Image (cartoon, rainbow, N blue to C red; front, side, top):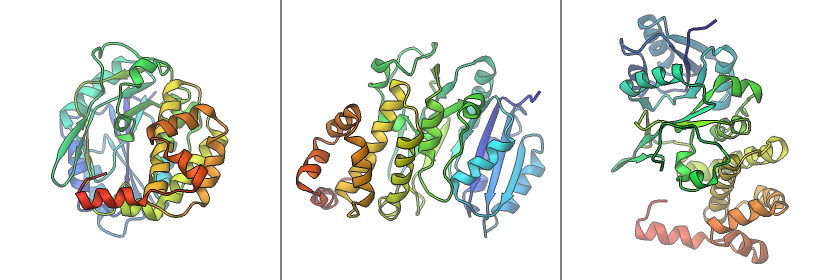
Length: 324
């Protein structure tokens, strides 16, 4: 039986400028060997693989390398899940980092809990600001149910992110988790498929994950999203075909995902092909339709009725210097 409490998957593609910061945060000498790092080189053409090998030599007790051809983010996670042995699984992007002290604390906490999902606060670093995504709760010493609507309605949609979720590996195996390969935004699959089988959730209080939003080319950058919005459409359509939305939190996150897609399509983009296909699915579910309309102030209903887009809204925000 493995002694690994947590397997951390680090997908890496041409990240030599950031990878040392990431790996330094998880290979410090006092990080116990109950951690398993699976660093996946996704066909990098820079010096990323050599840096991985350096850290594997430094901490051979915790660092494992997968060197494979380029297949995008989902393929990295899929490859890592095949060899992971930890009781729990989480993902760390190569351009981000962990708080080392909080990682050590998390390893201890995970060895003492049996909850299906652990949600940890995280910190976002932008060019001119830093802010924390923190759960809105008062009791950190209990398990919460994914059906507890009073708790989940208090939380910001930003809390429901890959940066915050640590799943029990048994849950991922139970749903046969396999992320779509070759496209962006597959972290949403990592959130939702296991959540459909999750029964108990616990929060931690202190910040573990540091999310660097300063790098050019981020998938959540507005220009990148405009080029790749059809990727999220593919994932949403897969959810409609395969996902069992079996609890309140799963439904809440699915609605938030739909809202993000409708927002980008109605306010930023101009290609309606996938939007029409997704909208046909949404209007068949009264709860999803009502949730999307409520969060976007009826904009989808106006689009349905009159084919109105709202590009002026983004132009006004750009003119006023308001960040999305």
